[in-house]
Amino acid sequence: MDSTPQRDILLRPDRVWDAITSTPVDGLDVLVRDGRVAEIGHALPPPDTADVVELPGCTLLPGLIDCHVHLLDNSAETSPAAYQTLTAVPALRDLLAGGFTTVRDLGGAHLPLNVSLKRAVEDGLVDGPRIQAAPNILSPRGGHGDKQPDLTLRYGAQIGTVADGIEEVRRAVREQARADADWIKFTGGGGFSSTLDDPTDTSYSQAETTMLVGTARDLNLPCATHAFHDEAVTRGVAAGVRSVEHACLAGPRTYDLMERAGTFLVPTQYVQVYFLDRLDDDAFWEGDTLVRTAFRTYEERLREGMLRPARTDVKVAFGTDAGMFPHSDNWREFPTLVSHGFTPLRALRAATTVAADLLDRPDLGRIAPGATADLVALHGDPFEDITATGRVRRVMKGGTFVRTRP
Image 1: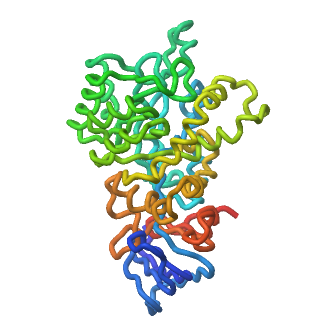
Image 2 (image 1 turned 120 degrees about the vertical axis):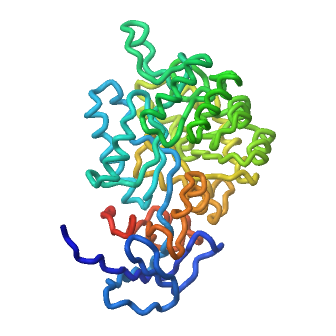
């Protein structure tokens, strides 16, 4: 076993944003020791054991957090589990190279494969962000998480983690806990990629929702609800979910309810824009008229709804639904939020301090003495040009530099 002490690293960017102040500060250095931030200050003298890393033209930020990803390729959900698990390896690599040092994977249809990915990253078997995992998406039969129902009807092969009624819901939550869940994710309503439901459908009754969230609470597990419209969001908030995913079709009263309840919102706006901006691209939609029709039907309401979060004081955490589009493009959520009225400060805090609060990781999402040394150097100043979030030069996770994109 190598007993050589890890060398300190002194980072010298042009400016540092610690996620606590409202603007970056020029001329600060950051000293990293034993995987944590040891010191921040102007012109810090390098210790004898330190490697000095110059970062000219760069802004140093805390490692970014994406609170809504899907690491596994859903199109491979009927493939062998080993193959589907391996489809996540490029996604993990792309996310980490893009400066996202922590992600919350909100589940797939079948088997708790993301829990194995979490362990593989922790054990150093694969490179990637640290993961908080909701093993599967709980759904009623015929709901958004009931995948490939034609196979169920013809062969009895159920693809999806489905549960109906109080007792099935309670059992499903306990099975997720047994699979080592960090989160419970459920479909409060329909979705745009569902074959059997509509985005304005409501999946679970209030009694089922309350039982689901209450069972999770008994097991010390927070809940996230997939919910686009008012009734689906309202039921989840009334039951005590920690986060609402999407809410793109919800109205002002529902946002007021989330704000009063202290519920986090993860708006996933880029994925909506990704599909809406391609509605007239026939080649893009070849063979997939279902999703195209759904987005065309709700286009006006979606575009209007995406302007709503910035006008509220709801706690907005950064999340992208990456996996529905290439993981390497998840940074585009930042300019999308800004285009819909968010200030760069609020957008960046959504992926740092607010996201860390959602995940209950106070050691992440900020640059402060004692914090975990997750750091990302961006070329440029994202407060002046938010697209700098797509120009990653160096990434550090837990005090160690990781490979970035060329």
